[in-house]
Image 1 (tube, helix red, strand yellow):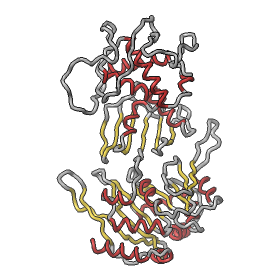
Image 2: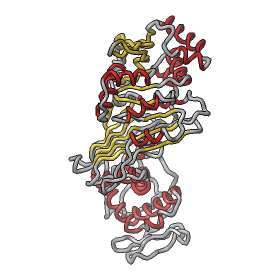
Image 3: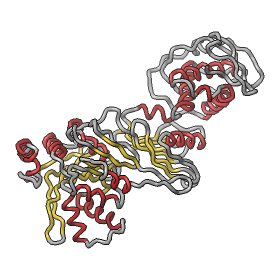
Length: 504
């Protein structure tokens, strides 16, 4: 049974034996207080109460002071008095509660138990708070103990793409492609660091002074990066790239204007006929989202192996093996790199290999896999154009110390990659697929590419939104035509290309 901790470390009464309305001992001089059952939870409101020991005590279900009814709105920024009150209540809770017993309860039961105890503490300490302020405080403290503290309401919102925490007092979010500051803050830098440690420990990693940089993920696959003091001077910097609860599809990207219906049809065929694909783009351009969308069109009987630094791909097929790199331990040993994973993939009888993000010498092993019987493999690379993508692949191979002539490297690239899909985040915050480009061969020492689809910017409207159009380059028979015919998709491909040309 869950119980409360006395000053001597022993168990006080268990909640199963406690009558509704029983008193709780104050960590300070003991006073009795009659406490009624907590009311149903109202909408959160801005906290503005401050501790007022001399104020008359009232039951928590007493009506709040009369005030004109206000329309529902987002909470205002909290003042220092709210955080002072919260700190006092939180300290009293930690003195009262037995955390070892709390850990044995399921999350809902633990949350209810914390709420009961915090209600009692508020009544005994005689804080002057309205019901809505008290509910907000209850929710915050439950999040601090059981969840991710002040981040919980942001993680619950599906319209937020990124959460950026710069120390304890500055939290920014990206909504609809625009960055804005929130009124949320942490109690202090230590609370922020504790939450960072809680996040990374869930995937077996750590962040502290000896290992101040860490990549991790949340249970829903959202990407997390933490850089802690002493490298981050003003407190830990936490960045979360959130994933939508509802996984995006190519059809949804069409509705958002990222690609035309005809262009999406070409991408579906590319995924279906096992073209080797590299998705290129800058930070935040939607590479991982696009990769997830393309994998929806892989046959469900294919064996897929994914390699990632932090496992964030959300493949829908039943036969998927997910692999993740491992950082070194405290002694600097035991590191498993992306290259180790890609090399090991080749011994696991894969039909497709998907590399979440290619950053270094592992690109050579991926290219080797692509042209040795693992057609349909995919990966993402940071670059700003298809041509730059090819240059970066050459550079990353050179970084691995491979002493190969430039022409040989380019022949390997041409023999491995079929299609480069370029994604971009435009200046108005919108994301577009700007190129669907084929790698078709070499002339001399130069790699030859041809664009199937381009995005041309026409201007912008009165609200500053980019106006543009996807246009066909008039290629009626791409170089992967024979591959499409092998899979019986040539008629569908011809129709999509013809329709795209008519639209132009």
